[in-house]
Image (cartoon, rainbow, N blue to C red):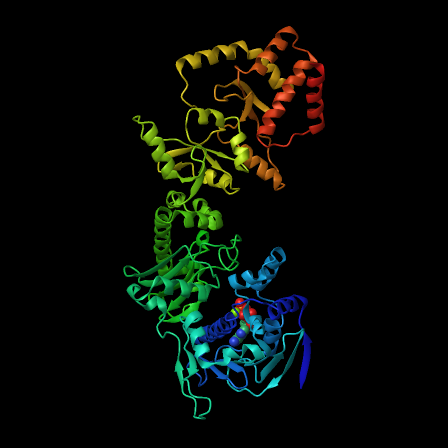
Length: 629
Ligand code: ADP
Ligand code: MG
């Protein structure tokens, strides 16, 4: 008895797209189906570890592919986990897969669907790029009968009971007339070699024979027998490393780097890890709750699909495989957590990854910057999490340099500082400013003096940088100093110091008035400053206070922020200040003086990209100045 179902709307959209795709690389359907078969076999393997009955007499895992050139039919069969009826409905009838969901979301934003299909794996449905009908029969260990799913990829599918006795799934593809090429034995062989060579499960194909001779089919393995990570490095070309990555990750851009290592020591393991360069939807999600981690093989058996305990969360964009014999095969996930060897492997891998990043930073700068653009945010989390490694990690990150107009590392900053000022102090200060954008950072009044004195400032414009500078207060002994901090001293000559003190004395009463006009619950103090260049004044942050940038961010997120009293620094050499002083001496109660004080204070706020509390009052004050002239 069969029953008809309709696809949910999303699935239908995807199918619509795939069946009408002019996408030239239809080849990928085979890779997708083989990858599903291989996943199903991995799951069966894992289950058989704890359930001794499970395998019955079907213990030889393999994927079997046949084709009928005359009738344009391909079949792909696996003895993996199979599916129950409910599972078929859940997995094949809907878009449960988050990757496909992301794909559809991306699709909303782009017109170029073909390049998207090429970049991301679209899964099972890709078969409808070449098929006019697909029949899938599957049997799970957990169900007595098998189930048959049939669809033409046009809005509906049919389910009925089947007769399959063996665990696993068989997919029969009835090719569209003009796609019959795919039923050719040599074509299948070529595609398997190209896209699925290192899948880790034998892919069996009949040996070629003339279709006219009707002999019994003899199957042989097409793909590599040996897992790529178990080969010697010298046996593997760069091209093969890349192809393997693309075939398993569904990320079809080049990775930044790979790490292939056989480590012997207090714990022995083999690992093949990839650091991606492009952002794709499967890796390095911004969300730290996503599942991540390499596959874990123990004695050639995959026991965990995503072994997050082998990598720190700030390296969650790194993937592929770790194999070891130093962990017991039948260990549970909970036991794994407490196993000292997993901790050792994690430490060792983390170190190797940091070393690789450093190497890429030096030798492959352009790609490395691309990588940082996509994953730098995640990497920076490490500075927050790792007390012992924070400086190592900070050394792999680049920041925008005010003087260089490009991104530089902290080491490059220090090196330049050393060259420029050959004084005896070994400890250099690393000056920075945090802001929402480069424009905002460059507009800050404090920056002018640094520019004039040719002292570099790092412009930190990533939201996470605010937290970064909270965790990283020094870099190998060199303090990181915010240029908006209250006590940042640039070298000031004795002469300047004396002048400043005199001005402070002279302006003391004016400053007091300013403080009281704005409000002593807003301002901590008003004082003269020589570090403002051509600006009138600026707001400084005391040590231990929330920075202005942080305060802004917290408010934007709707958090309660305790009042942060700033210090208003004022440039005594500025004309406007002189004007204020004149006014103050003639009539300290004048409306004009009050307006002047407010007007300039609000300017300081605006230069911090800060919201004013009353824009209308600000505009009216400005207009008044113009009219009264
Ligand atoms: P993905 O493989 O990324 O999950 P697919 O669209 O390729 O997405 O497959 C959807 C789901 O269908 C799989 O997650 C799996 O649960 C199920 N599935 C597909 N092929 C098989 C198979 N050969 N054996 C068992 N389950 C399968
Ligand atoms: Mg798949």
